[in-house]
Image (tube, rainbow, N blue to C red; front, side, top):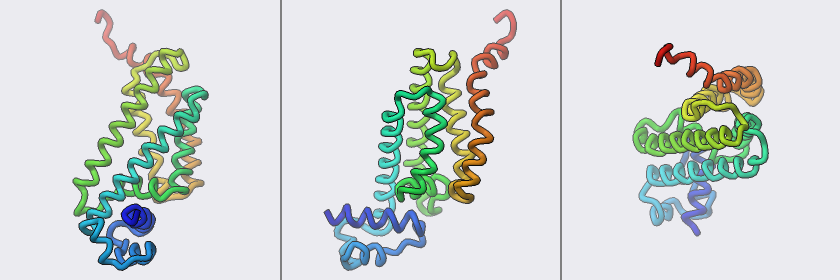
Length: 204
């Protein structure tokens, strides 16, 4: 149980102060143990950070799946548009989302490779899940036929482009970008099939 308590305290401190700024002593004080007691469960700060970050990725993945399950009754556009609003709220409400997102953008330099080993599978998994979601929407005629994988990658690119406002800007700036860019993005997604057909040379 203490290992979980240490991880939960570390989640808050790493999300707030970053890897370099977080203090093992402060984490131990919050749990109500001596600093050396941390080493009974974790080999050091790096181990604690990486295991906490892995937990954060798992939490965000679980919450995202729960979001899509709960919104399954909505049209695809509303689910995807709603995901972007939900994600900003998730960042504000949960340390796991803050820790995950901040380390996607600026991981500790000394732990870059280890962090990217968590980031890339997470992003690739999101793309695959979105591609399956789009394929199902096409079968159900919720959206016109389109290249699902390309649309999924485009959505992830769109998400990446506006989430910088969550970290560096504000909720107001994030919402402003989202409201302005979403109609353009969705129009482009719905036009993908037409664009793909027009790119095929005549006679092929």
